[in-house]
Length: 100
Image (tube, rainbow, N blue to C red):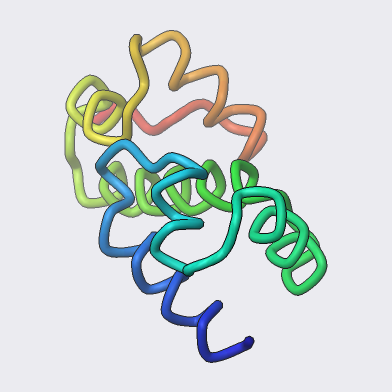
């Protein structure tokens, strides 16, 4: 099962800037939504949505440190507004996103 989980993690990483649904990911893994959700939490200690959110914010942080605009980064990672992204980023990091 760890091999399959690693493949799913790779899939998520390759699609972080796209819409990622539980249904698509569990189909990719070849199990039901219910089983995938439970297996993922058991093995990682995170819900799938927590994992995706944290990975997106981590990658967004890298983009911001590379002087990309906050607006561009927010929309790239699926946030509907800069305010929503800023709140999520501050909650995740404890800091406001860097404004270059």
